[in-house]
View (cartoon, rainbow, N blue to C red):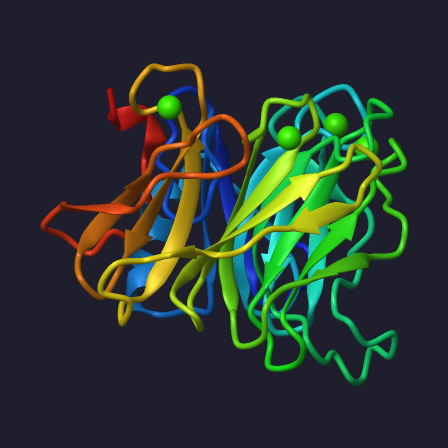
Length: 281
Ligand SMILES: [Ca+2]
Ligand SMILES: [Ca+2]
Ligand SMILES: [Ca+2]
Ligand SMILES: [Ca+2]
């Protein structure tokens, strides 16, 4: 185990069948992070034998797998309290090296990270030039926004641009798909503040067109995650959103034109902090 100086740590395990703890890291990674505490120590002990420890930003909330410079896969970590995304570039042997930690807040002044607080990251090629980009759901206290970081292909990113959401939306989670089947990547957000689902249709140039939010029945819940999948096999992408307050998930069936049917709730009986899309069939 090696450590790189840190305020907080992310622990990742490479290997088939890795146990996943937080965020949208799937595939072959297992990751856990946070400040030392009983839960974190338990997870860390499970992973310790096969993990390397990396310092990231302040209060990392989620980790996403992508590839930002070609070659082996990389990680992007959303650090909610210092308003950055840590980029860890894969070396191909299961270890990573740090590159940049681009800012995602609306304020250009690092000392005043107003409107940031990135929670969850979506990966996609939003400007269609063959390099992966990032979109962060920012639940900060300022103007509510999704930040777009366009990748340069070398593990670095252009300065963030922002898609303003409806006021008080507090987007907590984000996922990418193609909801209107035009070949451009679109985004969906789970909005804790308004208890709605935000839809941003991509134009293919790194910009997005904000659509009316999807209302949620019994809208005093706590939407903590959104995922994209085709749940009814009609080749149109659907959305599922987990509601931590009611212990259920909502399914919005896509019409294939960027709009969705009414959300339907399904009781899952547990606190659904993370949705495993692969478990639906
Ligand atoms: Ca890479
Ligand atoms: Ca791109
Ligand atoms: Ca689209
Ligand atoms: Ca469908």
